[in-house]
Image (cartoon, rainbow, N blue to C red; front, top):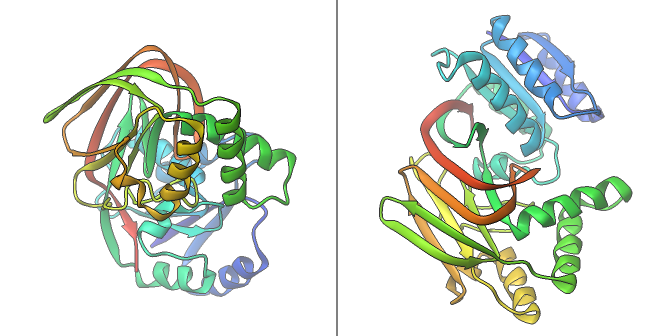
Length: 299
């Protein structure tokens, strides 16, 4: 078994210690991603596939994992080798997908998962031409993501979960945007104004928000949460409820489960993000589910 570790620096000392032990048991290579841009992980994953590695371990957060998966699917055109699987050692800020698999930040336990080589097939999503493993969202929370990323760059001492909270609070106080949208899939035809829409594979996103508490990563379907326009005080209450997963009981919150392709149209460009990376606003989105599309190392 050939294993490639793709690591977002700086790597922790505990990781390096465990990796040195691991080298005695398996044929491995380690490569560091560059700080300058997210596409480095994508290119490293592409090369690992071309070089015949049948395990790629991403050492970082959801963003690193997402970029790597985009590289894998671009290279294979979706035809993943049957003996291929990926894994993660979660060292990022949110690690929402790893949490969905029950994988914690315990580095020793993460290496045990790799040694045991137990595999589960997980769902992936695709929006327009981009793949995502944990979440796709439009509207207010994409704006929050952008502000949170800026805060984290400016104040590196700030924990990521606090950067999301500060960003959300700041944007709510300034202005809560709303967007006129149409959404259509089998069993769902929605038209109206929303603050945000979030589609997730696991239960959480943004480090601390349990946006879809009923989500499962291997059920062949996605959970959709819509929040309709509210005032600032109510929005702060919604924010608190979202950290507990109780927002789904509020009247302004609508939730859906879907497995067929979903089309989203907007009268104006909407900011959007996948797995924490924010993109330029667009008016149309085509979301599809790839059931059990990739094998993942798990507990």
